[in-house]
Length: 475
Image (cartoon, rainbow, N blue to C red; front, side):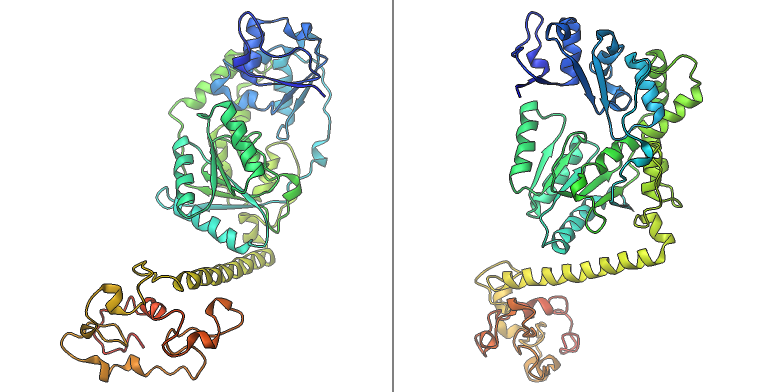
């Protein structure tokens, strides 16, 4: 199949910089606007037989850039070309309004709403302050990497602003979590390169202000960071978990809401007025219908009403807005309040994940402590108080690490009398267990040869090293 793509840079006043010898043409909505303005008869010259409009809900969802993009679809039926509109999030009212705007007249709906496959995805809603949400996001992603360490999966983080995107990416990279970024500042070539890199390379996370079309078949977790501009955008965010990965055992939409609202006074009224002035809905449609339609689906107030609903299934409510009926999922944050068994199972899994997370953290730290002291970060430090603080050892108790204050604790410090009954190393106190191979063997913990030296002891006594109770706190 011969395929071409058309971008605004390819559409000049005197020529179109692509081959006309194609079977399939991908064209951006901005390029289509330029094409209709500069070459209004080009579709006929190319002998186009079918037009497919993907994500057509954005005719209403992107009113902020309607004039230089979606307005080109007004009365599209005038070209006498078969038109197919595609969207996974369209209710009957949206279909009627868009059909009116494109001049379709009578149209046929392909598919049935009551047979729509509801995504088998858990929706978790958590509320945070703007001051804490970033650290909680990073913490959750680290937990996922531990609890799902035996799975190959990727994470998409949908943010509200370009500053959010940069901040999130920087925080993840600081924790050695690989992350790519896509915003409206990226050139088309940069977007294509980034998407290709995410698909082909090992970068785990994608943080983006863009939602539609940002697909990766390995995504199992989507994070909505701070808020969502609308319910339709929220549904599109959930859809970044593609059908093959939609399984409630491991697929989750995490909504980390902070109550962020970038809208200004009068924004909603201005949008509603635009819809009416541009005659985007049929004549005679009452104002209440238009107001409710736009507010519930395409405005942040609709998202806020959704997120603050505490007594309905989130997934059921989300798709009901699209006219799609479904049953309670019994898995979302709200459902778990009313389904004790489901909630108990999820809470138990969360606790088990936390246990595994803690174990993995300890194992990672043991590997590090073989090579360096985790207090001073020096490989030359053996963990003794003298070496770690670079002070004379005679001023500190070897057993409890307290400052001697002129009293010699070495002879009567209670921390010197710790008995382990042979169940752990007497020098680093680690239990020698086959379940923790990072601890080494008994031979690795001989007197004077413990592989951890005094580095673990340094950690255990770190918070009590200034307490003058002759080793009681250390014990």
